Image 1 (tube, helix red, strand yellow):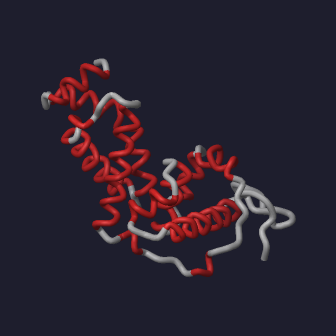
Image 2 (cartoon, one colour):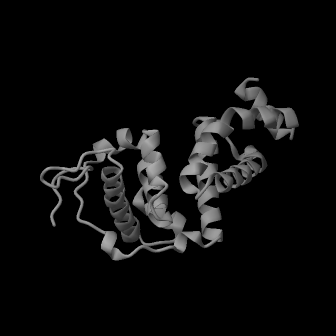
Length: 193
């Protein structure tokens, strides 16, 4: 079924069109949910709730940009809203995990694409993981993240920096990357201690 037929059918609440749309996009959107969720069951719940919103808001899609991108944005916002509703985002981590990290942003996209690294991102505390996902993977600005999560922009920036430092420690511990000789950050130049 073509995308145009799926859209037209979904607008008419046609079950087979909705099923076709779900089957086409749900595997990738489950991956998005999985990065925010604590486990597969939570990710599947986020996915289901997200697609309910996709179907109820389908009339708002204006064929501006890719349909997948529009669906992805709804799924991401659904994940964030579920985390906020369950007050799971308020988990905090001691400041001891913060390190001075100088970041080479050009390395992040290639790093984030590895399936192993995504699994290790899931080991991060929820706040760190959420900001890292939104900024490095979904492409939101710190200003947008602050608005979405109802936090200060500086909090978004510090959570992101702390998340990268903690992820680097995990990757070294799991032997995904080698410890730097001069204590150079995985994400850029030498760190100061």
